[in-house]
Length: 194
Image (cartoon, helix red, strand yellow):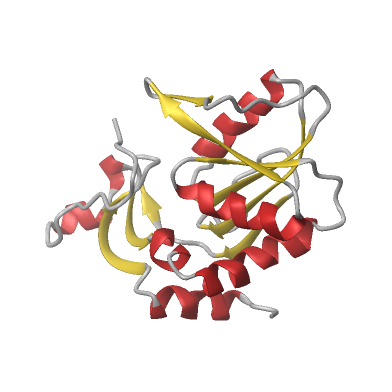
């Protein structure tokens, strides 16, 4: 199934995964929209369809392993790896630092695709990239379900999102929603912001 931006947005809306309000993003920025990918990823059919866009994009790349940051990227990374028939591993935070645990490792020269659910500033992806480099493995690209930056984030590698859009976000001190004072700030994601 070939999905376009409009099709992916319809899936987000039908699963109530595209939220409207006043949100604190993992990046620390504020936004009037929040993409709760977990609400989409609870449905294997939608997960398969949306992740197939990433897998199809990278299917001719030499890839040994797909790596993703926990929590948000885990299902995305696993499904892309499943469709590409590659190994899937994930990073997670330990004492606020992204790391590989559970016996996962990478080999020097191993070809790695990084996957994530939502990219706003790319913070978690940049952390995963640094881990991959420390092992001497090679990054072949980055895939995500949503790119909120509309292509403004540059990872230094091929980047393919299933959905690319320019979602508004503000620094906390410049937040137009805060200045209006009508909506409480909500943090719906899995990671605490410090």
